[in-house]
Amino acid sequence: MTDVNALNGYTQTGTTTNTASQNLSADMNTFLTLLTTQLKYQDPLDPMDTAEFTNQLVQYSSVEQAIQTNEKLDNLLSMNIANLGAQAVSYIGKVAQVMGNVMPLEGGKAKATYTLDKNVVSATIVVKDMNGNIVYSEQGKVTSGTHEFTWDGKDANGNQLEDGAYKIEVSTKVASGETAANVVTTVFGRVTGVASDSSGVYVGLGDAVTAALGDILTVRNDDYFNKDDGATDGEGTDGGDENTTPPEEGGDEDGALETAAAVFGRAAGEAVKAAAFGLI
Image (cartoon, rainbow, N blue to C red; front, top):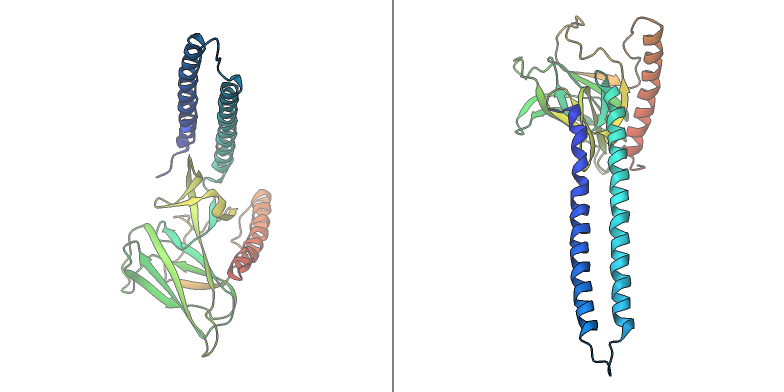
């Protein structure tokens, strides 16, 4: 789906500017040819006004400088995107939390969060395939804050669905006379690759979802998507608050990563809350 080699594809940005420079050079040569021809055949008793063609030369010079500036800016942008892409390669193999509502089902596992900006009467979590068909639903938590949702990839009849992209939607009901609640969702996925184009840098989540680098809230070591973690398959669950303690991992280094993950989790929760209240 995504390919790290795609980082090399952004070098094509210079094509447009080079074409512009070539066109300007051709126009400039044509202008100078016409100008010298006019000067050659001008009436000595009524010579041309030098101010007019001098002004035209100045305009051509300004356009040329603008094109050169654009070339340098494009080169800087290309280098910046390449650097971001190179840095994002370190995310591969880790689990990223991303703003959005399309989550990857990987190895029969999917994970998301939803944030309510107020208490509600009821909250219904619906999972749909990319054709809009409802494949699973359950009742969620009704208190304000961030809540975690995990899904084992089984539909309402207990059939295991294929890995891929699925959309999570949370609909709420509030008391009579109250304004509707705002819901913000995030999804989790294992980063499988990095790619870039003229719009920016993207990461692949699982084998079916692509997210912009700027939409990533946290990146952590998380064994949730490990196929051999011995987890027991069950129905999708609303796992409570996002700020719960992350899975334990052995070793001092892993312990430090776990602590960092907890800090990132709290920061992500605050960011999602801010988004829900329209602060960002």
